[in-house]
Length: 335
Image 1: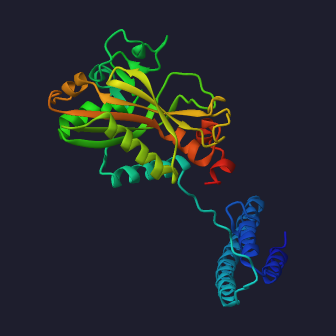
Image 2: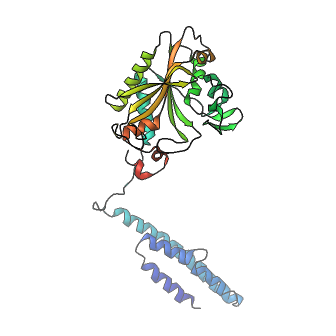
């Protein structure tokens, strides 16, 4: 092995380096722990002691010199690079900005409308005890809504703990906390044990509204809902109230709206009827008011609950609720 020839080859290669990447590759090739120069020590182990000592000193001295030259060349290459003029013809890197999910956009718009109408926005827990989710809302033991396996739609975590099936579960919490008069909306995610299709999901966003005062009637309920829908859709909307039954309201109503996707002609979102079941509403049952710690003889009120996902479908003319929870970026980038 001719150590001088090795040094000559390495120095020639160093002189031909033109950029920082080539310099990094050179350092790794020759000065790294597994580099070519380190391998030379393995080749001299069988030499005589005096010869090995001389060559070892030569190699160590060369490594020191080479390190210094690499450092110096590195500084030069960085300085040369910083002095170069910018090429203004090079297109900039495209940074794609994120944005709010369409359901978040709609949720915030709904909250803003109700705040302008004098409501306060409050929240309730997603994991709820059965008293607040059922008993406080006049849903007794044995009611179908409490059965997770047959007619009911509730996810049980354990005997007395559920994933809330409606944001109504927070009603009596705030009656006790804030008293009356009371005007609140309660947005949040709810969970239902049911088959998914174009208009149903097992978890979706819901918003509950509640007003309690001394002189409240069905006329107040109808007026609030019409005003909200008019502000939300930015136009006059057609709604209908159908008599219904909910344990926590009496009288109770289903509120339908003419389908904005098909303009009443019939589509998959409205199940070919031309109408979309938008929300349930009614006058708060006296037992619920009493469960909230208030006097049902003095205070009356109304409550309503609606799916934020369904409102978003109507607003954006989306015919399948499952798109909102699909994670499909092509879909989400439209909003």
